[in-house]
Image: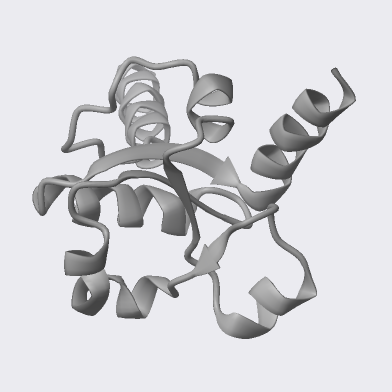
Length: 123
């Protein structure tokens, strides 16, 4: 009975830790709504071109995650908000940008960034 109990605890611990996203970079402490609506921000949609063409946030540029490393120099010195469909590629983009010294913020999904923009436009 003890072995089953500890086996369950161990399995639960592995399951819980497997769901966490590895966070190796420090995310700036900023209000994402303020950053998205900032006049000096660059919005970067890291999805593939077909997804980007189907819909994205206003004024967003498309730099697919696979091409981000090769275009990193164009983003240096800029305030960048990255996003995708659900946030996983955006997390990867955040890590790449931070490692290369880019001021980056996680917008999570394009729908989230667009909703922030729409909310501001209504005011």
